[in-house]
Image (cartoon, rainbow, N blue to C red):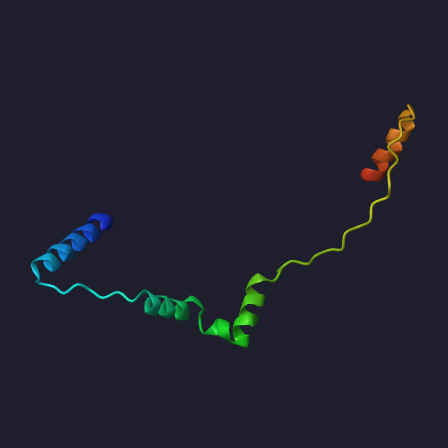
Length: 97
């Protein structure tokens, strides 16, 4: 298995030496043109159409039925000291089966 980092470094070093010897011309870099070209590839063709919107909806929509939340009864937090109050609250939380 080859180490890709060392292979890339070797290629870069080889190119540098060849340019120094005059065997290879120095590559011309146009950052603006490269950037513009990269922007063309950043969005796929399907995403520029209505089909892309539909595909995105289909990919992200929920596949499960969502239930409406149930409203909770307001609970009093006042302490009465009566154990029966606790039992009533427990029955509200988990009714007898």
